[in-house]
Length: 137
Image (tube, rainbow, N blue to C red; front, side, top):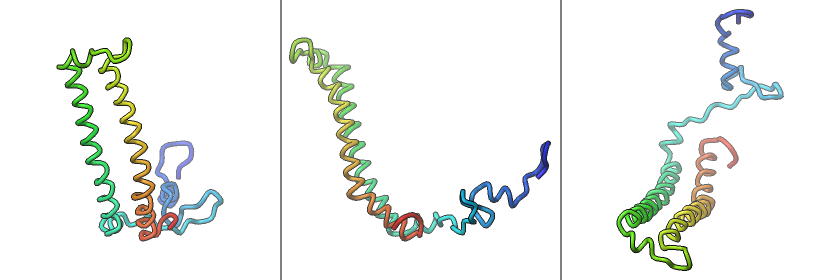
């Protein structure tokens, strides 16, 4: 490495800066002997296929349901002025309640996903990691 000007970085130093290989070291200075995970092997494993399937089984239907609900709200707001303007309680209208329901729906979906992930996805992620030899089993 050249000091005080533009120069090339020593390949061993550059390799160590990337954090892999024999030149890499932990913050304490000990060399790291861990190899990078084999992403192609992980991706082609049956455990990873189950993980992707479980994720898609939740995400796609939930996305469809929420977008349908949102589109219904937008169409009602655009074309059903009398219905959306109907007063429910004082100055509170159906449109205001449905608009607030969008926020409630978002929170409900987030909460539901969190429960689903803890129950179905996280155990599968741990299995994939264990099979790959990375992270806690």
